[in-house]
Amino acid sequence: MRNRIIATTLVAVFAGSACGPTFDADLMVSLEARWMCDVQRSVYDEVTDIDAALNDRLVGNGVSAETYSDFKSALIDDLALRERVLAEYDAYCDG
Amino acid sequence: MILVLTLAMVLATAAPALAKERDVNIDLRSSKTAAVTAGDTAWVAIDWLAKGGDAEDFAVEAEVGNGVGVWYPYKSTDTSGSPETFTSLMGDSTLSESEVDFTAIRLDVPYDVPKNIDLILTVTYKSNGETHREVFKAKVPVAYYDGQDLQQVTADVGPIPAGVETWVSVDYKGFAPRLDDVSVTATGGSELTIVYPSKGTEDNPIPGTFTSLRRDSTLDDNETDDVAFRVAASEPGTYVLSLEVTYAKDGAQSSMTGSVTVTVAGAPPG
Image (cartoon, rainbow over all chains, first blue to last red; front, side, top):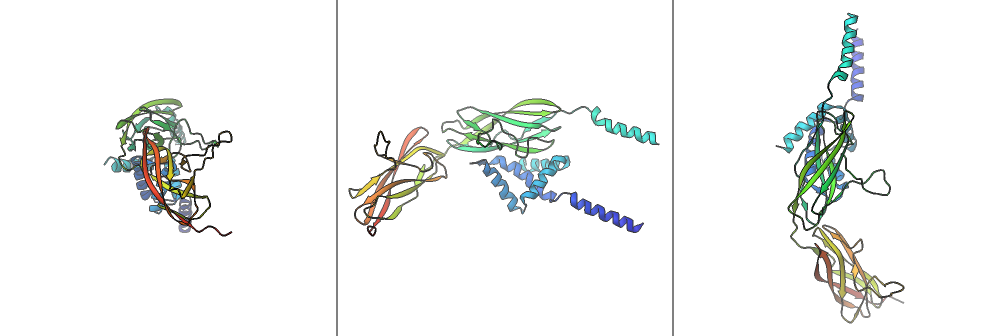
């Protein structure tokens, strides 16, 4: 019985690591909130400069484009995660 | 027991359908954009928030007075490169509940505009199967550039061979937001021959009297472009050419003078 519990736990851990978020949520929430606020504080010569500015932030924070893409995908289905970004956005942008 | 569980499952399944569909509220997060410079062209980002539900097919059309032009991002699916007639969000076309995302628009701002421009943003989106339309107002603050219009970057050219018409180019860097119809004339002594690019047409073969920028006739802020012309001198030596660059800024003609030193080496062998 004990072995069965351990095996079940291991399966759950592996399953969780395979399907769970592949990003540091605290970092990504902070990064996203600041980016969404700061992007409207600047003007850009070309529309591609907006993407470049985001990329600079990602690189500066050691975040890959794939990780950011994973985070944006997670936001679509995760209201709690969006509300975390919004709370940080409000604190940073309106504070 | 089974009956109770079944009843609970039925009620749980039916609950969302019975719940009243909530209204979505769209919130424009800032009443003003970043400041643009009079005479300049710039992309600005505008933040939006959805509250109470998801706003699908989110689209924004902008309307600006004072002669300001509005452009939207280019169609990603259109190989002709024509712009959209609206702008959507950075992430996708849905502004989910509690999500902050932005739209981008390009503003072509004339020189002669007031220090705050009215921006009317018409948002359309779908929620609960219905299309909604809301109108928001924001301000675009305007800054005014008051500095040097442009700078001649190239001070020396050559060495070029004696006795041969040789192309030389002179770089200019723009500082003002936009300078139109930029052209340059060069004046040397009697020892120098200057030939401009235009040879006229076959019907009217009159050579040009000036040279223009290589890329186009406009010099934007922080843009460097060059003018080219041919120079010939029969004798080796160092020559100083006077240059006059003329341009239109805010519809008014302006000019700036400068010079470039041309080094002419010995004639090529043969």
